[in-house]
Length: 96
Image 1 (tube, rainbow, N blue to C red):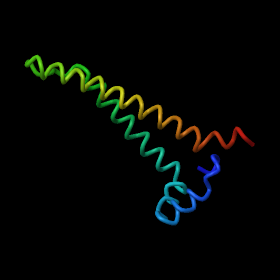
Image 2: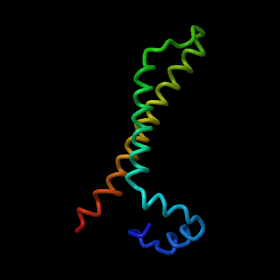
Image 3: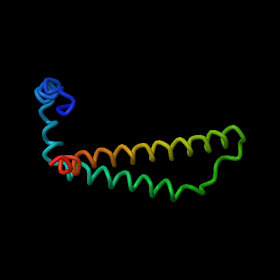
């Protein structure tokens, strides 16, 4: 927000939710924990890739559709995590 010129938004957010500064102070812990959870979700998704779907045709289609959606959501989460980690840890070093 600060880079986009929204300092007042950040000030208002910090005054309304002071616990948010903890997230900023503990970025390695937050990103490490969330990275572990995303990796765990990916491993569980991989492990369940060959799990059987129901024999009912409608339920089988729903099962396959939900598996596809789950993979897409996991992929989007991993990309968002990567972008967030880049800006939290590496982008500032590139500017200076």
